[in-house]
Length: 66
Image (cartoon, rainbow, N blue to C red; front, side, top):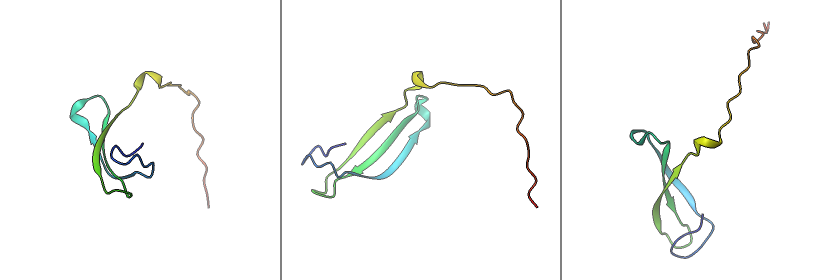
């Protein structure tokens, strides 16, 4: 991500919140530019359509370590 003020690519995330009440898997990220000191928020949404779920019916074997 680039800084919207100066265009620097050295942007740092200094806080993250998961917005559970939205129900859509939204993340709120607080970002800061070390070059000019600008701060802003960005929202990220998970693309749940691209997830692939696979099942495994094999039982897991337990190992005993002594």
